[in-house]
Length: 154
View 1 (cartoon, rainbow, N blue to C red):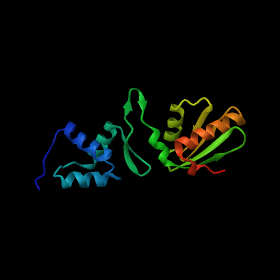
View 2 (cartoon, helix red, strand yellow):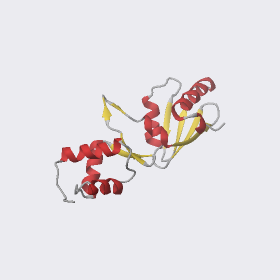
View 3 (tube, rainbow, N blue to C red):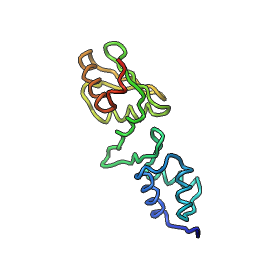
View 4 (cartoon, helix red, strand yellow):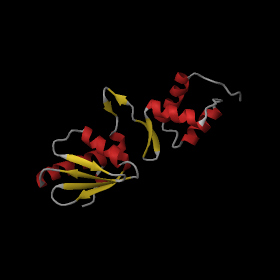
């Protein structure tokens, strides 16, 4: 197969298509698919393209987190939540895959749910503060809707 060069816009369209189709889980896989199609791209160019396109690795897959009308499409970060549970009458603790606590925190904040007072995130754990036991119950109901009942530990 003959290797061909393409302009940046074309290359980024191909990369976006691969990510949208869910066909790749690593940069090496992206490079391999491009190579099979006869497209020559080095790893540093691919990294820049992914960054410019707003594509990040989330829960083991590359996904677009580009801005859309000023709001990041971050709900898919909930896939990276391992479990969550209550911690006293005013807190909920959420455990995520490594590196995803902050994006999950941002996703929760973007929901602007009145039952959630604030979030505080580290690397793989985040805390959610609520005003009362009643608002904690409401927040738990929301989290179960967003993240799944199976991730809630009583």
